[in-house]
Image (cartoon, helix red, strand yellow):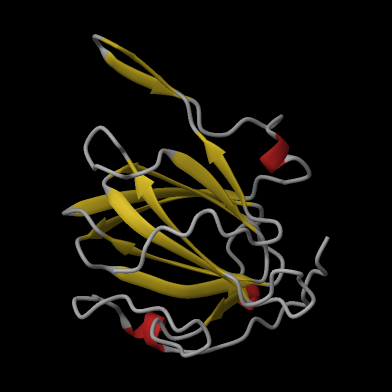
Length: 183
């Protein structure tokens, strides 16, 4: 498994460190506010929840228009981002972030990550199971969804020998929606 490279920066990717307020009943954690700088200019299109088993890999996805905000409240995932925008000053940079609940999963970071259009994104479940909650700036539009196979040489990321994938994560297709230019 590769090391955490969250200190590598990709243009437009923002990591919001979350604050947890525990008490004897449990905890409270605010994830996203409309007034957060990393949500500024964003719009709400959809909120989704994905429950995944150990070793599941979902990669590589990207969009021409949609922005994603990812949060892993249960379990631990390795989130990998790759800047695939030729006009970006961080073109071909890769970020790796181990996200999740640090009270249950050592070394997991309690964060919400903003993923702009054109940035390839994928994850692998490192715990027995994990939940990924994500907000998208648009409702699902198949014309804005692009994929590269999880083992694509474009990124060159090693998900390990235990990667569990489905057919969609072994295909390649490009969105037909026009690309949104880099802001």
